[in-house]
Length: 453
Image (cartoon, rainbow, N blue to C red; front, side, top):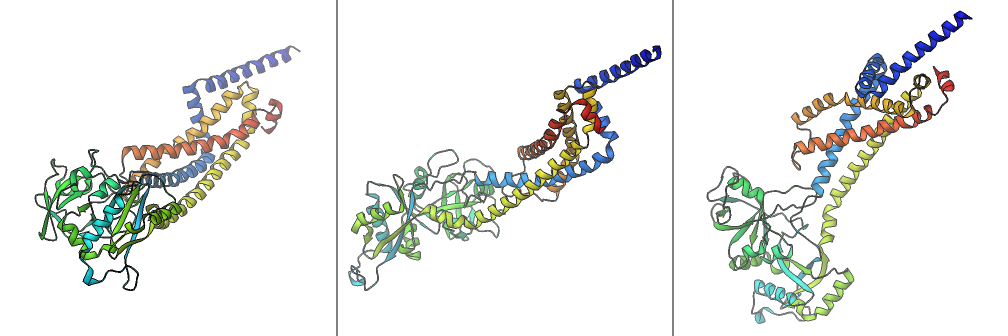
């Protein structure tokens, strides 16, 4: 009987001591972290496989997140212009047999004069906000006019054997599409009434003069000094589509003799005739608008025969890009689902196999919430150990130029954001994988939990 008491007191003392040790280890953050690292090292054979899986998944997931970052940032960056309520009128010329055809002997005006008169007639309508004309330069028209251009006092090495996209537009183009300078002022105010001037984008200004002040007012030459123009303004960056970055390009303002020359070369019926309405119109409303205009849509043999919203050209041009983006997003979603279930399944199985340990800790007095916090911390510590190796992997990808740095520069913000999002996603997956089995385990009675041990 005396030995029984002694044995009972000894067991109680050992239990109390071990319980105190477990409680200290879990309740004190620094001590708990050391305890977790010691347990992880003792279980290194099992943890090494989980660590390898997390390492591979983190690398793949970071590449996916970085791709998504570039696509999303590029798509939502400013285009530099606005196509809201803008329509493109279709122009043609009357056939010889068409009613109202004006014979050559009775023709007393030129194509530039007819086109100018048509613009004036349509602009007089109170529903019309503005009208402009372009040649292969309308937004989303897939225009492809390129020309050599050289600065008079700039970097000629930058333009050596190189052509730049040129947009032939009337001055009203900048007002209609609401294009501004880099200082936020309307470009139209800088070019209105001026002859033989151009507007350059920031990329071209930087390439020509490398950040030098007073770019406005400098002169450039086209096609080996055959024609000189003055820079009237530096516009905001202009992008061709939502999926592309701004490129070095310039606008040639069609005014006076230059307007006449371009219209005569291409023909008035080839002009991209753009009209901005004061309010949103449907296609049926625009058709009725054209019917109400009557004879004002005709000048000699030049006439308007239809109308299409610029948004229609946008949808057609972006169809291929949208399909490519959709395929990429589907692949990323499929991979993300696989990563999601893979990580959750791994940690779920890991927690299921540790029911005995959980029961033992509960039997020795560990609180449920403290125990859950301990297991979450253990999983996140395992994830955190992959960070140095993933940073080395990322730097290697940068060195081998495997990231898209053409559309978006590789900045510290991009690096931090993509890494942060990657580890947040993985941390969330790990916590979900731990939460459900641990939630069930800590609700077991200590005797039942110890049965697994």
